[in-house]
Length: 273
Image 1 (cartoon, rainbow, N blue to C red):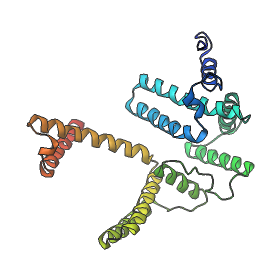
Image 2 (image 1 turned 90 degrees about the horizontal axis):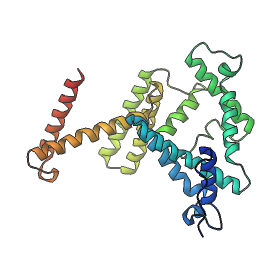
Image 3 (image 1 turned 45 degrees about the horizontal axis):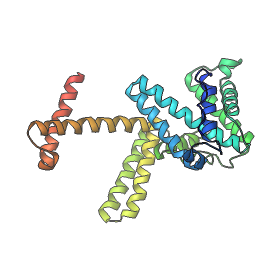
Image 4 (image 1 turned 30 degrees about the horizontal axis):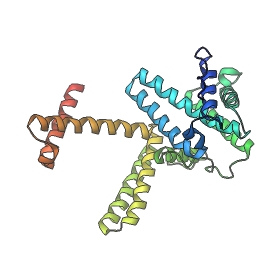
């Protein structure tokens, strides 16, 4: 027989933990929730993080509130499964991040001081390096950069980590020159018809692009999200204009669609001036 939900007058965090415990109850919990593992839940965690980023990008605070709740649920879900195994509980997660934030902000919570934001960033990386060394978890400098990150994000983190020991192109111009070199190698393989080598060269191009983003202090994922949104906006305008002409996309051709695209670009430039 169903039991009532945890009381609504409980403190919100306490109630959420009780709800998750109930969902994972072996006797009368939710069948779907009971079959989940860290591995099966992880993709949902990543998806929710992206939805948080999307709401923030759109400036939709009501949606952001909901998406942050969904992301928090993911944290609670993982913590509950770990608690069932006797590994750790949600309180341990909160305690760990509390300690980490205090430890990594000695300029706020201790007597440390930094001359500039750049010095603070170096101090942050030094503290992280000390933590890695203390854990003894990674043998190499790059070993603990998560494999599951989006490719461009991981490329930035890998290149940033390598840069801490001087393995870095000295200037932006050097990175741009390398990008031109890699694009040339990609074009050569495409023209030769060797798609397997072209795949590798494309990867090299993207890695250098990630390096360029790091050098310019630009988040490549943020940049591509902006461009994706711009593409969607302009393509939607093509559809609107074709509909005004009594046409569908299938009834148009590249020349007509490209002409509309250029008109939309011109209108956006004029509106921005």
